[in-house]
Image (cartoon, rainbow, N blue to C red; front, side):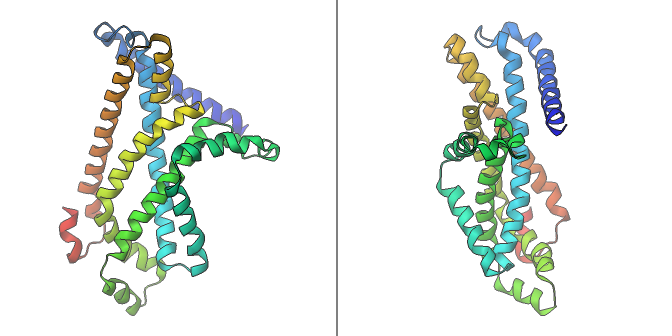
Length: 265
């Protein structure tokens, strides 16, 4: 039942992408190169697929990184070692290897194929989301930890002196200030993840690069990759605008400290 629900949701989104693609591409087709015009709806589908995959991965990675940063800052020592190991592994290995190890590697084991996890590990889209999330979370954790360690030591001592719990200290004192200081680096990580997402096309995901490869294999026209590059630039502009809006408006609601007041502007 769950499998059929996931498939129905996936194909509903694909149908929605193609419907928008046909509406947008119809008037534009005469203006596009011959190698791109007939396949324009494919590029629109790939554009939406890439955007959805990257944005969802960034949100999940941010939530995971926030929790890991809290444990690395205020958690017990026996938890910090495996978290540090996870960060080093995902930062120290190419994302392509991570994708292939999980998608192609785990499929070699029968007990994995027979388990409930195969519902997700057997799908290129889900594996892409999992790997992009874990990879980005490792980088975001390091970024947040660096910002937290650069805060004045008096911030932590003051919170402890008034009896705040570890959770209150992190979420009300340390994290809001660290988020302001690290936001440009986190936004850059989002753009880097967007470019890295092109690699999910190697595990059968028809994202923007996946569709570009398919169309190029039929026409061998470099305009295909040129069009894909333009769309990646468009997505980069959208992510940059989203980061600016979040920094400009959402940060106003976060607790502020005079030492960091200028960084929120």
